[in-house]
Length: 292
Length: 166
Image 1 (cartoon, rainbow over the protein chains, first blue to last red):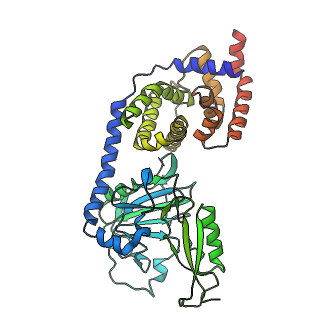
Image 2 (spheres, one colour):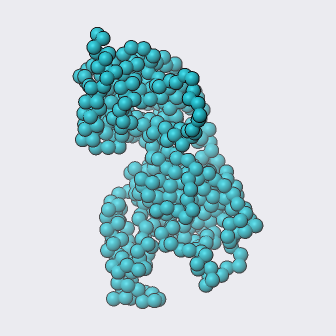
Image 3 (cartoon, chains in turn yellow, blue):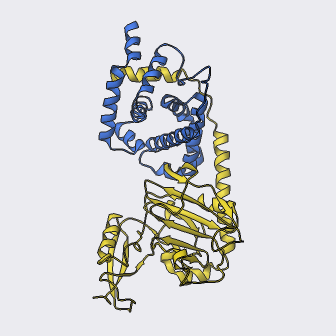
């Protein structure tokens, strides 16, 4: 069969299917409806955060506000992007990162789930009698605990596994209070987002609707899976940054660390993990010299 | 040009071929229209990205293929065993007679990857590079898949029989 024969036969076969006019009106209506849903989420975020944005901007600094991102990849107003690779979720600008106590969110926050902090195993030494129930977004790699997806969806052309948003009043340590959550995991990119909210499934779905793919940006990689137990973790992390297309600047600090750390112990990175940056941006890694 | 007008013009020009591409990929005509509509809705949501893409057609076809793959996966999950087969089956939706029917059966015997390459290259009129971009594979992979698909089609019994009847 020649190329020409095949093209001709496919044209012939295709022409046998009658096609009506394009449903432009329906397409525009459906998209407008989806945009409105996203808009409501952003509006709610703006209203909740308007009183604290000015203070937050001063305290958090440009890294946390995602000020590096501009143009078509800019986050919706009042939000910042957090993610890994080129997959992101929009969270309110006023949220911090890892505002946790005993591994549990203490205020509305993004939790970078790279530290393997286990609430149950630490609860004996980390007893807190009453945990607040607050909106929070976890971002992680690998398989999230208890993940059993209900459907495969597609976001910006990428397949993702998603659980249905559900609420429960039996979740430790929030027993007796409503806590709702759902998770979206991108298997190819190995990144997942879990939204938790005491407000209801609608709020969870609204936040998950802000997940998007930004091929022109890259998330600052995670490091807390290696920083404590691996010698020369700074070098291993520098390799991750380079692989992600980011530049590395290592700064040494002699601030005290207990117990005495391994050489190359990472104290912090700036911008924070999960911040979306254009490739080629520099990430500063502060390394402890206390173990040297 | 206003983005809205731009989108409208794009849809008007590409709609029939997108629907028929979906049919050739294995959809029923109704499914094909739904698939094309879902694809274009996703494109409109990110139209600024589609407009900025180096190759708009490759971008749109990538969404089409991904949406198609997702829909097939969902449908497979939804299948349940049954004691009795339905009385009438509709193998495919490309037409009921003669050449089209033979071609339909031949396409069905290809792997999903091979079928997608054949449809994108020979019906959607995408170049090798565009096809590679739409499928998220290397151009060399497009070449090898297409080569294997054409070899399979050239020895396909339905198409051989059809050629023998001429």
